[in-house]
Each structure stands twice: as C-alpha cells, then as structure tokens.
Amino acid sequence: MGESISPDIVAKWGILVRSTTTQI
Picture: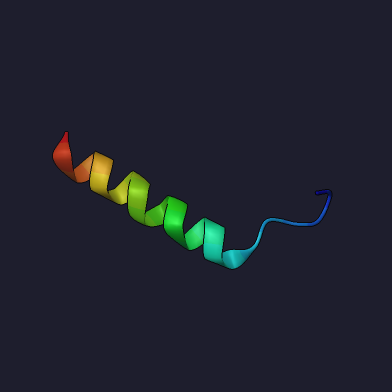
C-alpha cells in the first residue's frame, strides 16, 4: 500500500468534495 494514489480515487474524491462544496 505504498503506491501512488490512483486517478480513480482522486476522481471520486473530487466529485465528493464538489458535492459538499455545492451543498454548502
């Protein structure tokens, strides 16, 4: 578990953050 972060995870995080920012 020492590999670089996968783009898939980054994309999911981005969507999550965007959703939270839009709610606020």
